[in-house]
Image 1 (spheres, rainbow, N blue to C red):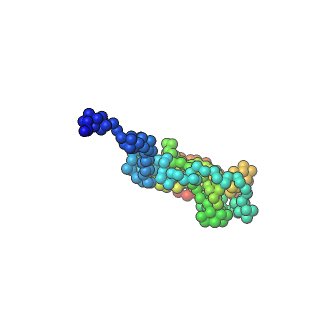
Image 2: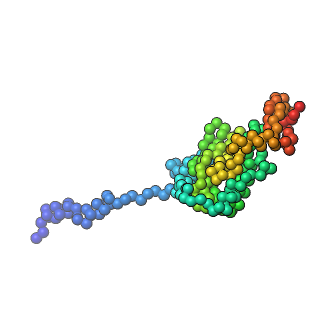
Length: 235
């Protein structure tokens, strides 16, 4: 005959199977929440709606070149590439800013890189988000050529209102490219004081000019082959 008291004691004790199940659940690793894709605003922690100034931009997440220095200084490039990169700049291509700074238009740096490495053989990689200081936009970029890290520089560009941010981002990138190209020897003459002084003496002139609207006068530089443009004029 079955004893009711024994039945109650047995039923009150958990089975070995249930105890094991509890242990397995306790030590099971919780699955990680998926990271939203670029542009998603589903999570407050990964809000990329303002991606222009967001340091965790989608296309940078998990990108090797956003942090890598792979291939840096491993070996020289082919002599043919070196000749293209370090070829003296044609004096007819050099420009001068009103403050006397010599420069080579940014598009010509791109043409030199295309001749040396071929279109698609080089690129600029962002190394962080845009940052703003007053009315100056800046961003760090790395120059990659034939799969090798070459140089890194921060480009900057002034802007006057939010409507000019898109243009400022392009100017920022171009400025970083020019700075990175110094490490490849491109247009190195433009940083040589002796060359700068000789070029100015031969091809440039500094004059007093007057602003057509404000009436203020200022000493500014120009090429001898150019004339002053509105609103500046020599009087």
